Length: 163
Image (cartoon, rainbow, N blue to C red):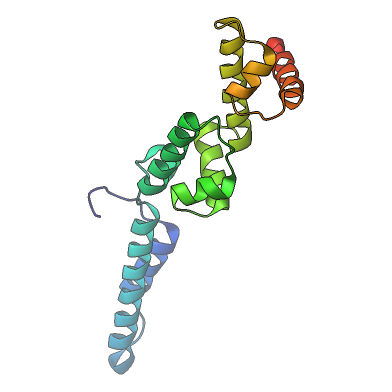
């Protein structure tokens, strides 16, 4: 908790100054200083709490980071399945919003685009390396209707040929 030095913020400095330069006398001084010291401790603890997990990648709590990587591994091994955000959120043990935000932070894309790109790349391998038909490739990567895959694959290849 206290293994790293932290800068003194303006708020902390103001509280320290209020303690050091206290103008109260006699009966008011002691309770005033006690209250100010408690405030200062709360500010220090809050600052320390804000700085926890800054050493983890993307400044995510380690548990969230690992949960999102677990989802990514799940996606890679279940690419043929119909994957939904709520299902992936259950696997991660977090709500859908937190999962989507964390996933985008780590992988710089949405979950849907990530899954689509993986499917397109796998389909491309099936077509080029295994000499599959477009329909066969579509089924291999989880599309139930080859015509939907064909439209998506054309968009994907046009976009990535332009890059």
